[in-house]
Amino acid sequence: MSDADKAKRIVSPWWRWPLEAFFPDKKFDGQFQNPGNEQVFDFDAVMESFDPITMITSEITYYPENDKRELFAVFVSGLGQSESESSKRSRRYADTLLTGIANMNNSTFLKKRPVVACINRRLDWANAALDYFGLSGSPVIENLATLITYAVNNSKPLNLSGDSLGTIFLARAIKLAKTNFICEHARVFDFKQRRIQEQIWKQRTSQLINVFTFGNGYQKWVAGPNYIMVFIQGDPLTENFGITPQRAIKQKRKDIKFLIFPRLFTQGSFEAHNMMFTIELLRETFDKNHIEIGDFLGLYNKLNSGTLKIATPDEVTWPRDMKDYTWDQNSLKSIPSLSRQESNFN
View 1 (cartoon, rainbow, N blue to C red):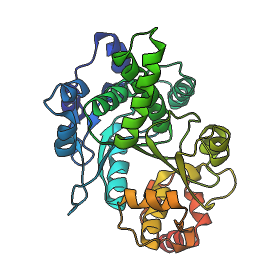
View 2 (tube, helix red, strand yellow):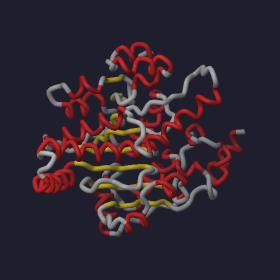
View 3 (cartoon, rainbow, N blue to C red):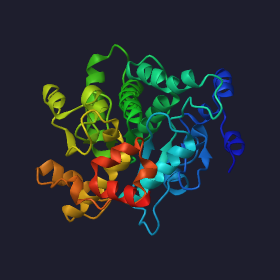
């Protein structure tokens, strides 16, 4: 499907037309996409369907070949990825961890032929900073909050996943969903009822909402959902801006579980933030613990009991095409087996 055909499927509010005219990929911001066939679905049209969650699982989710279709997650990608690049990486995620993935697009300012390239490359980073401090309103946040609120109100299980900037959107969306839920069921100045609804929110979300992040970039996550934060030691974004075990202790957040892999790259390398390496370590961790790949409940239970054995980089059989998902080719030198592959290829 061409970009023009995809764009026709999206109904944008008039006030976004100028932005989308200058940055075409923004047309897909906050919209659903099946990363398998890259078909785009208008978010509002999905939510107006008879059963949005069923529509997501049956039409929007990409499942690996021969998958049992028992698990799916709505995934928000990281920074600077066009909808086609995001789909490519999501397919890798799904195929590696045997999990169904439905994308909610976090669109980029990057253009194929920018007028001023040096400025265009920095727009995503500038916007990400505004997102972190809550000074910009991505449609992803509002749309995710709407989806979460629907799931909680209708007792529908919902798995959410995000990478990098996508985790910031997730955190803000969950906070907004909590606010929306409480406001729907309690008046503004009825403080007693609002406290009751907050406890109902926590109880329901603990039963329904599961969050699985890669390279999280946000420090304060709303209590209620079940969280697993996955990252590689040395990830500069997570260690500087995200929730870490040390910060979780200060916040008294025993409900947040962490899966932290040993250092893989040199100090300060941003490659440690690349989830394409993290998912390979995660797959090996499933095998190492004799857990069926994709059994995230089993993984969570092992984490919760403190019995999970974490895979080390030297235990992973790295795919030969890792260079295709690597930001800095020199980083492959940190992994002897991949470094040898690259030398042989050259």
